[in-house]
Length: 328
Image (tube, rainbow, N blue to C red):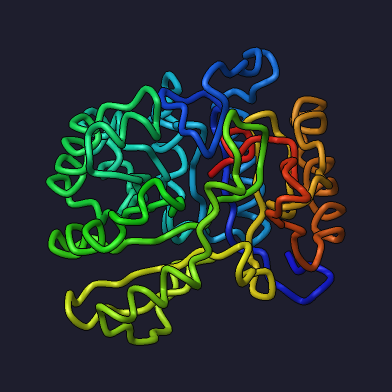
């Protein structure tokens, strides 16, 4: 699959559910209304959809949510896709909030998952609770322990928020690297309506990086994981630090990704509303021809880049759908 700008699409992110057991302040409102189950693809439908994408050249699949591990029976999907590793699929990964990892770390490893991303924005119990509203920090930390015990490579994802957790960035880096975990910092993204003010939350990572450079030696590296992060090596800790900067420096020129929501909508760009309905052809026939045609038509519309912006003049979300629906 090659888009109009010559970019090869080889990475698929699939949201298996819009539901989550946290209510992070930058992601969603506290009192969310989730989708009726009839609108959500079955695990068998998701597996079939992924199989078509693999046949069309996708080499990496990341399962996301919401929180993917809260979906009942989700391990059957990991096992089905894991069986494709070495058979068209190079890597199967997951992004999780860590709340269910103590239970699922070993089954994930057994299914063929080798690395995971864990979202962790604070290691202070009270602050963690304030950010996630419903989260239990000890449960997440035990989950990370279980993941490492199971042999999974863990990367910590931290959303940098002004006046909220910016003082924890360096300590989080030190902690992650001391445990052999890479870390990625992410700018707040203007997606979906929330209870707070993203203008107040937004912390440019250009500022964060400049501050870190006063404390650490940040060495450029060509390391890539298939996603949008750009990495440096921190000489003093020996670990890698990634930056995902959709606002201060977008990563569109090398975008190799598309996303499928749990309702079967294909979004060619995280920051644009154009989408393709894959659920209808998926359910219309057991023949994948209609599905393949819908995917081809969508890839031909993939835009050059997104329009994310956060300003006091434009406080509304750049796109109305939440990250939990789109897939983190």
